[in-house]
Image 1 (cartoon, rainbow, N blue to C red):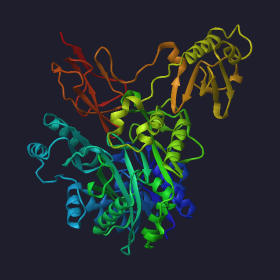
Image 2 (image 1 turned 45 degrees about the vertical axis):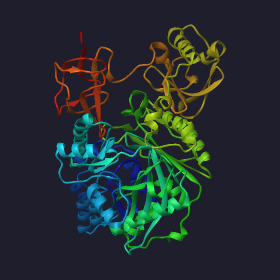
Image 3 (image 1 turned 90 degrees about the vertical axis):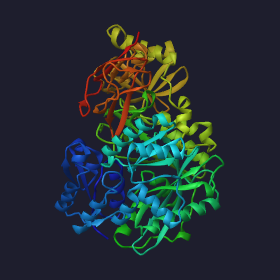
Image 4 (image 1 turned 90 degrees about the horizontal axis):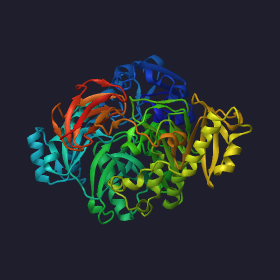
Length: 635
């Protein structure tokens, strides 16, 4: 076994790998960009090396810099995590050529499964069922559209080199195909350096079922059962669970056998995932599940598999990379209970799920459950990287108990001023359809109206905020005693100090957690007197500035204003200007497209009108809240 490992990644996955390495007595080495100089994964490592500026292409995606860091620190092994260089065959070969242990899939397997069209051809040859579609070399827009027309809508355009929902678009009608293709190709080129695509038949009521496989250098491959990752938003997974609800033993046997067959077809070594799409219109059936792709790396959702099997997959990766056999035989693996994982994102569900960036002034995660995170209070969510800030993982005897535990965990999340999807997670797992297991990949889109939390509007809170401001600001020189005592008699508002400056607030008999801030936004407690000017209330995962709400009502961030001004919701780069000055546009029509945090965000016309201004050109970098374009009402 090697004695040191460099993790060529950042955030929660770097911290996760370090955890196992420390337990096994292996020295840990981090790499970091200038944006991550104070990041948690840097401090948790035994040694850390700066590898470049904030943009990933100049740091985490720069293979030469990562390899140089490994050589400089004497790292005996490199673990790539997921994303970045984890499925880069050339990097894997360079690592091995340097005499360093590669903790990942063999380069040949990465290549075989890295291009979705070639992978599907290989699976057909191996006898694994695949989804109907087009995987040809002719990439002309005319040929692609013709194939989509032949397959029949809806279809899915997917980047050949894609993953993680990037470079993927559903198209419901022929007239929308070319626009979707252009957007898909731009995103694919930006994310993977390859704009080639394939076309698949879009499965109605699709469920995303994946099987964890693990192989060793001695030809043995086992599976560690399935996960259901159907709860997705824009092809990004939000909640994953294991096992899959409604999976009977016959179907499980068929899909896991197909997964093992797929892994053996490429002589797979290490942790990998075979992803399938299932037609869920009649429940899970062996003859209605098709191969989609293989991820030749550890998955974000690997903790739910660890929970139900009792296996540490990172330890298994270390052992396989060191030449050891798979630690357990297939008949020694079994399912124990039920596990769920929710991805806590820095995003604003009420504003189209746009990423939310900034400093985590207040960051409290629940106790009593597994938390995988690379963030801490005082850390910063950067525009340069994925907005996932933590994973909440629960394990219970039954699915019902796991869902209850996950809802409780998400409801305890307290983050300010960065917005999160914690309240959204609570509503998802408490939704009647989710509780009964009636979910597919369209669940969130179909139920979004019920899942996005409404702004806090309890009049008791508004009254309390008004009263607080009166006593704290206007009447501070006249009042005596604590404002909380005075408020309690007037509107049923009282506070009890709890750790870290958070208060338990009772409003009209309902308990909420609150964060008290002074005029400089510094945390305080009631014992500090009458200087509190803001109250941040936390309820079921949501955070509300109730003082500001009472003062001026709920406010929005970037996006379209009522006057037709389109503002940047966050810093980013302009990647397309579908509309030009003078163009007539309809409500909802894209006017300008911003790329930020690895995703494209189209800013659409808020009403029918004429484009009066386009302030930036393709390639321009823009600041948050910058005016990008203006739509003027026609007539």
